[in-house]
Image 1 (tube, rainbow, N blue to C red):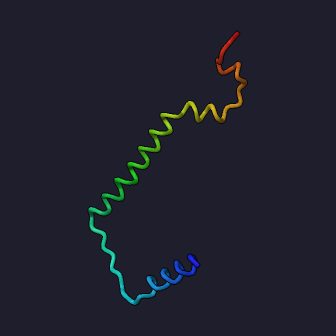
Image 2: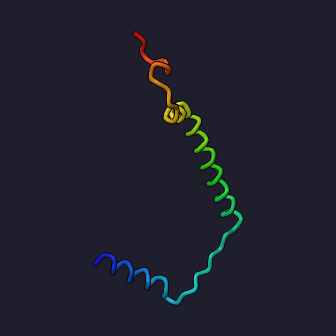
Image 3: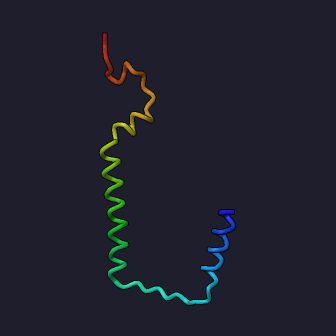
Length: 71
């Protein structure tokens, strides 16, 4: 029931006969560039912050070699 309503609505919206004009001004391009740069810098910061956990996850050392509690 829900799928048929969504399909009908999507079909109606896509075939309503109106033409849609899109306009991107120079500010839009600058905004998109800022979003991409922020995503890259944020990703680099996350990787830097959790680097030891990331490398520890892929390392196959025994717990004794990692410098854990020694008796």
